[in-house]
Image 1 (spheres, rainbow, N blue to C red):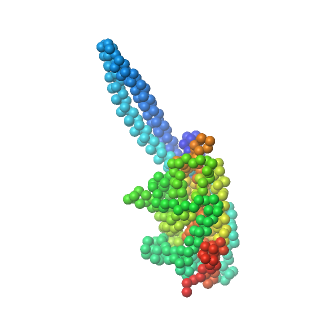
Image 2: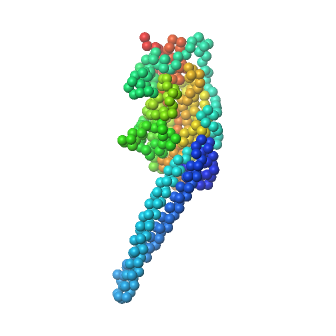
Image 3: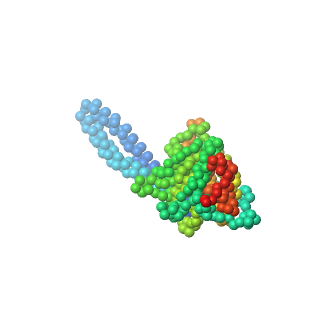
Length: 439
């Protein structure tokens, strides 16, 4: 949620942010008008309620005076005045109810209008859309398979040779973009899970297995029912949503709470299934398990003081890089352009692994600084010396299983179809050093 003070004091900043994102700047004016109408409706209700209270203060004493009066003429005078005030109070009561209803309606409209605005983009984010990212660094050596004397196989061919991936039966049972991880494929995911959770715990994260079904407030609060709504699965009969990332239940974990600032940062690492409709991706990445409707992921999430958010963002990126370094996968780090940011992110960095058979880098992790945007929507605040204010939230992918499996299979393959296991994973696979094709 945009800070209302910022919206009122510097609407041009938010208009510029909307333009940078490729979104409608006129939504800022809609929000300003709705906010103005809300304040006017609130003032009208307060004035009506104040008049009602003042009238009540006059009625009480008159009722007491009427009981005490002994002179008949005095009783008639008081009774007449009291009757007039009671009639006015009755009429005013209806006006107060109407003013309250108008205030409630105006508040709902203003809340919806402000909620339609995406987070304010960090001015350091590159200008442009999906292809306008800035490469920060390339890490690791890309293998020259031609020099090694063989043509690399893609992850699906390797997965079938190893008995690790079965997309044919996945499609039979669940439809396109579904799959089975079988044999060493399943074991590889379990190994990655063990490695990721151990890595997260060693770096101060509390391991979590959060729910994969959430209420609308959690999905809306994290910003996934705006531009990303088309990719969200909704269970209409229950008015629940399947999460596309553990970011949602982890962010909502402290919804409607006030945290002591001395307890910050609070860091959680959640393992969950992730469900995505992949609307708009028709014809893209249809082979294998790169772009699927369901996958498992370990997600890092941090609640911290706003003034520490930028440093925390760099820490999350550092942990993602350390994890990829350990897996011995070549990758690059990019600064994502403003037009390619999610609604909640002010700035985002992606790590993209080299995929040999695609001859390009592909996203495997990302980390976003959401500032106070999500905490305002979810009503999560911190208390510092008695002062209560929104805190900052950040998220970062540690291990998106299917994409990391792809990167491992393709980058560590051998000419005979076997795959070397990165040393860091071997203890989680019973010491196995090589995954060999089925006989």
